[in-house]
Length: 82
Image (cartoon, rainbow, N blue to C red; front, side, top):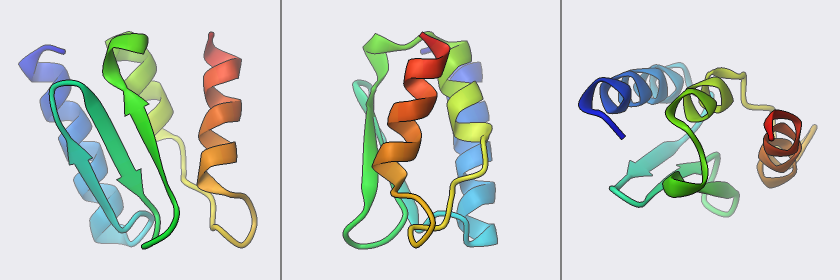
């Protein structure tokens, strides 16, 4: 992942944290973990996706856990893009 893509990903996720859409995220060289709450979250293995796919996936609005589980949501979105 290039530094420009990483900066865009961090900006989008920081905006989501500040708006309360997600609780936290953790970005390393090999994975991205997005947590909606203490018990719900999803982990992206970064080498399985292109940079554009990651940006497209994280810019989508994250659903409320009472409506749809975050794991189910991202699994459906990944299948849609591949």
